Length: 249
Length: 229
Image (cartoon, rainbow over all chains, first blue to last red; front, side):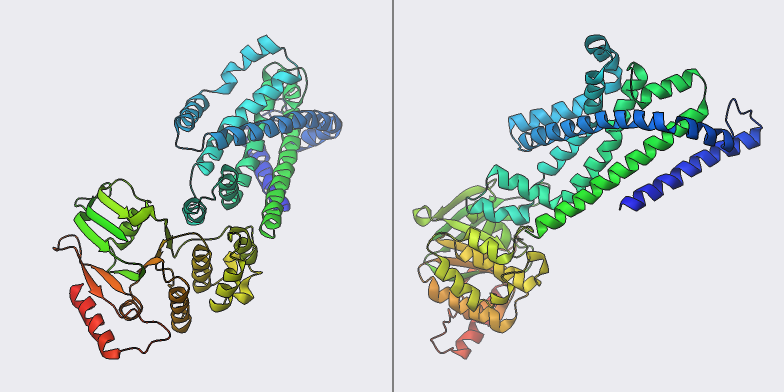
């Protein structure tokens, strides 16, 4: 699971970088536009430590934002699973709000909260919250009739049991969604840093952009990708372990 | 015991109603059957009687407001628990001896440590039926609850149920005409929505373990059922 994720990332990254070098060769572009492999390698050696530290900074914010999103999505999803007025209201509200691009309100957050940790965290959480919420609501509002019927007709059904049955039956889906939301959280944090923050890999990429230094951006992308692949692989592994342990009683 | 009067029901999107003024009465406790080809409405009527379907017109009365449970053959147990643990948790207080007796008679003793996903379809159905039999009920509707169970085990289970619950009402949905004619007292045969009357009632042999079986009478019941359907 873990090695597959990393392997997939390497394939995608090498294909991407290969395409860039192909364009450079085909159009005979200068190193200023697209640096050569040696230039990228040297930049990597020079900037790796600093960028790694930046990526870890961004990653920490993204993980905290994702955990907050998961907790919020589970709470609201469980509350909104019922076909009641409240449940319908939450579903409609979630569908409508998620249709609005959260990044568009990022400048307001920077104006109100400044360019520190809290704004990055808030944007990361908001970006991965709504897709998570929609998935959790979808899973939680879908009855597992063949299992729930017995508990319902014998008067044993409690909301905790209902949530447990639906979560267990959809654990693979939930793990996939949570793992996928890691990318969103990381993207949210980087976008926030890119817009106005004063730390993190998004901030470093913004500086590299102002310097028109594609080598730095490619090195940053490599570290971001490998970190995210490892994290997603670990999340999937945890999901599989959790399911196995749960099924084993 | 159960009285359904003037039941009219149409599934959303269906062109014609499944039931149009249907009347069905089961007047005494015992082991009874709903019989008929697929799609004539046996399960639908069972769900109407148990309250799982409520958007119909007409009246359903269970005398004395009796508790009616409906169980069907595709039900599953939660995957996080072993069969034995699940049965322990769902057995009402004081019924542990009955549970152990059923486990023995249903041939499930060896399966208590297993997960539901590890069982065969016949074993799944036996476990599912067992947990319902341990609950409080006056009427239990068994919708193909013994499907995929071998003949001798099915017979032993039906005899056991009839001897343990003489005062309860059972509605057994099955496509096995021999079984229905042999074990059931009253058999409601569904004839389809376009025939009048939609159902007719045939007397079965209501056979019990301690009585001899009249094979001629059994054949007559089977013929009556087949002719009615």
